[in-house]
Image 1 (cartoon, each protein chain N blue to C red):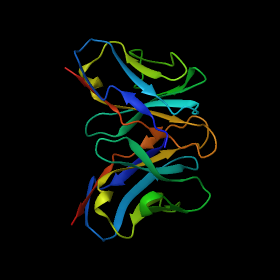
Image 2: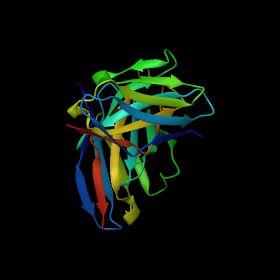
Image 3: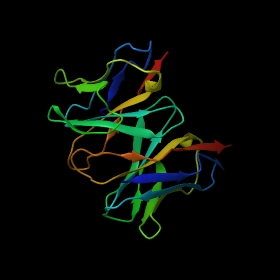
Image 4: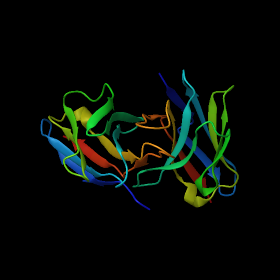
Length: 115
Length: 114
C-alpha cells in the first residue's frame, strides 16, 4: 500500500521568503509523485510530477521539487513566495504513470503568505 | 485550456435521498475518476472508469455508489440512498491514459446531507 505524509497542515511565510512544503511517501514499488495546488473555490491543479526521468522536477509558477529516494521525500520549494501562492497544496503518490492512475493524497498543507 | 466541469457546485439533500453528481470530462480523455474529500480529511480515491466499465474502485465505493457514462460527454456519480457521512466535496477528474497522462480535476461538487 502507498501513503503520503505532509508535515505541517499550515505553513506561513513572508512575501519574498523561501517556501518549503514537506512530503514523505511510502511505497513498495517505484513511486510516481505529484504536487497539486488548490486555490479557493477551484479544483486541484497539477503543479509538477516526478516520473523517474529526473530527480529535480520543475513545475509551474516557479515551484520545484526534489525526489530523494534515500529519504523517501518529495519536498516542494519556491525561492521567493508571492502573495498569489496562498493556497492549499497536496502531495500525492501513484504506482503507475499510464492508464488508470489511482492517486493517494496527503492531508494537504495550507500556505499563507504574509505581506 | 480545456477543463473538467462539474454540476452542481453545491447540493443539499435529505438523508436517504438519491443524488446524481454530473461531470463533463475533457473531450479527448479516456479515463475518468471520482475522488472525494470529507471536510478536514484527505482527498480519497473512489473509482476509475475506462472503456465503459469500472477499472478500479476503493472500499468506500460500495453498493450505494454507481458511475455511468450515459452519453459521449457526461460522466455521473450516483449515490442511491445518501447518509450523513456522505457529506463531502466530490471531485471528478479525467486523463488521457498515455503520454503525460496528467489527471485534470474539476472544481468539485459540495454535497451536504441533512
